[in-house]
Image 1 (tube, rainbow, N blue to C red):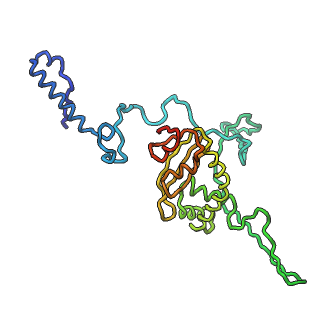
Image 2 (tube, helix red, strand yellow):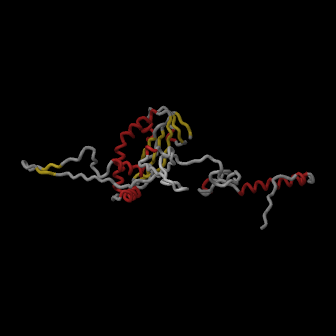
Length: 295
């Protein structure tokens, strides 16, 4: 199989001595032209004015590093990395395993090893819904005939979901970005109980009501922050278009969904009392802040 030799980018010294000035100038012009054509063969949005849309979204830029001759993975002599063991007192079950006889001669063995080898196995417990049924008896008065029903004990929810189930359902949809249908399907298969998408929405609303007071307290502290990172992105609310606003303070983050991208949201959450620095892109709705830092 034939291969093409690479064209040198400079005149070899042994040939340069034999060239006339005119020939040398002509060869230099040809080499410069070759460099220009080779550069055009590898034009990318990173090294030219081409728009990013002309490149495949998963295209990887060419690396200037030479390929290493070492094998992949850990190299000989590297420090060992392994998952640390948890303290023995934190284990749910500790089993003492002792040999009964010598592996060479068969002699009976007894005693304890002061430093036994520790081997820990993590396993998920059996996940099963804990269902409590409250039977509310309604009894009639033998004197007046009025019926009285027993009330639920204090702290028992009026709905069919306890506080941990409500929080877990909200976690799946908020932090782990699962849809209502996938959340309902996952909980049905995990707990062996019927779930529906509409019920997950109801539980999500209950979780929202539970954290609303804490959210409002943090939102009230936002205008007192020295620095706030701000950005917004389009989203959907019900069947209409909306905007998800994000304000990142030093110790907390405020999210707000609003139907508009106008600066009214900046006025609402930062308020005219804000005197800190807003770190943002060049979107004009943030310009009403007194001090800006471009990100």
